Structures are given as C-alpha cells and as structure tokens.
Image (tube, rainbow, N blue to C red):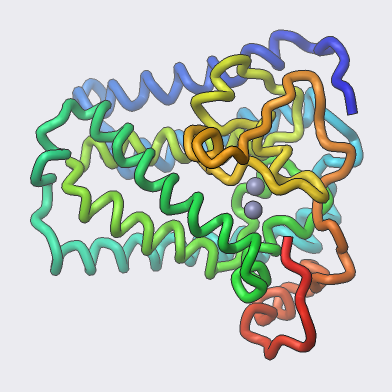
Length: 297
Ligand SMILES: [Zn+2]
Ligand SMILES: [Zn+2]
C-alpha cells in the first residue's frame, strides 16, 4: 500500500527526533549527576514518557484506522500479556543480577570497559541484537519456538502497547539470557549498560507505533516503525533486528520501502494459531504436544 504525503508533517518527522533528544538529554543529565536520578529511575521515567508521547501521537495521527488499538483489543487481549511482561521482566532482572554476582565483578572489566562509554554501549547493542537476530530467526522457523513467538504476531494490528505483548518465553530469552550474556559477561560498565537500555527501550517502543513516523536514512542504522512494521506484515520474512539494522543488512533480510506499508499485518494463516484472546491457551500453546505439522512463520 502506498503512503501519501504526510497529513501532519510535524508529527511524522518530529516525533522521533524529539524522543531521541529527550532520551539523550536525560542520559547525559543522569550520567553527569546533574539531576538527582538513579539510572533505574531514569530508565523507568523515560520508558513511561516515551510510551505516553508515542500513544498520543498514534491517537492524534493514526496510520490506518484498522491497525488502531481499541478498547476491545486492549482489555480483551493485550492487558494480561502486558501485566505478565512486567512481572517477567522483574524476575529476569533479579535473575540476571543474582547470576552476575556469582560470575563476574561489578562495575565493568576487561577490554570492553576500557572503551569510551558510548562505544561500550554500541558494542553491547550490536552483540545483543546479533543474539536476538539468531534467536528471532529460529523462532520464526522452529515450530516449538514459533508457538511462543507467534503471540507477538497473531494480532492483525501493530500499535505502541504491543511492544509489551510477548509470550514469557520470548521475554526470558531476551531479558534474561541475552541480557546476562551481553550486559554483564561482556564487562561493560553500568553506565554503558544504562545507555544501551535507553536506546533499546526507545527503538522497541517506537517500532510499534501505528503512526506515519519517518526517520529517513536512520532506518539503515536503527530499527524503527517503518522497518519493524514490515516484520509484522502477513507473509513477510524480513527485518528481524530489534535495535540495529546491521544484522538484517549483513544477512540480507533487510527491507526499507520509504513510501510503502504492508497491505496486511499478522499471521499468514490465523487459523494455525490459538486466538490470543484466550490468554491461558496462548500461554500453554508452546508446551502442548504437537499434533501434525505446525505452520511456522
Ligand atoms: Zn518476529
Ligand atoms: Zn514487533
């Protein structure tokens, strides 16, 4: 489907620079102690602000009405997954902290910690997204993993709160295993890990906004709404990255079409997957005995 000239160019071209500038300013003020914020508080504050701004923008300037969040989609489908995401993330964070205490010294170590903090954050994000890329492609290929990851793809819409609609297996893979390996075992300092988390949160939130947000050539560097929407396109097998575009470029799965969006979002064959409105059935689906050949996407 072709996109027309933006109806609200200030929102189309201004939303991302505004959020990126806000993220940069809070990161700088926190790391240089110009504001009395802990890094955890800054992460939480920015996450809430980013969601609130993205939410307001998609209400004011929706890309397509049929991809909007509705009361029915939020209450009837998403809320239990969003609640479970918060719980899973807390458990994962605690697990990472406990495991890291046993395995590595606190405060950074080794060659990565010797780099400037921004370079460390870049190394962390590149490594994290390489692991995610491998897991994510496997999750779209191996039927058992697809049964978990498909929860994120089964809605035929994409909007901002969907960045929290995941099966806990997906979240534990990224928030626990990958975070432990990359954030703590890499030797990156806490300041670098803080910066990397801010970038990760910003990109993952903005990627799901149902609004005509455009970032031009930046799409070749960071994953955003224009490219991640194609990952949710029915029948598409592209753009597996979650923060950086480089691994999709390297492995030739990158697609960026500045003036086009997918005709339809969601599953190739919705009948092949449980209705995510059945929360418990969708949660149990990866653990159920496979009957016949499952259709992976
Ligand atoms: Zn996916
Ligand atoms: Zn997504």
